Length: 159
Image (cartoon, rainbow, N blue to C red):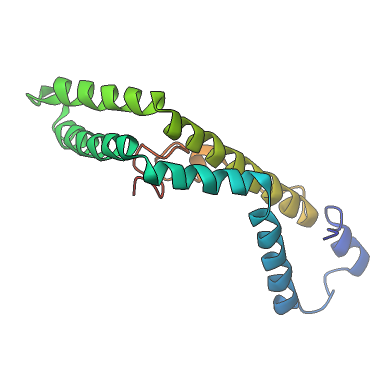
């Protein structure tokens, strides 16, 4: 799919370039999605996602981490003066450390980041094809609190 250089279409055709053919644009978007799904990064992501779902030890750690995180968040509502605050914080940190040491979790996070990076690069290319001034959010600006990993509560694996 050949994209025009940034602002090229506007300079060539001016503001009255005509109506956007949304059907054609959507077809191209689906084609791009198919190409992404056929990439090595997407295959690696799907492989490690399936491995993570089958890894009973990792799933138990994820469940325990979720409970510990919820407990810590509940204690945090009352601040450091909550009687269980330090213990809840320690437990959540310990389970997070154990998750980070789990090979399946690490590989899943790496594969997830590779796909995320690829999608960001594509978003930047599309935005720059329209204008150099279009901002493309990335990192924490678009994440939902999971930090890009599967085990901190914000992604598909952790809910």
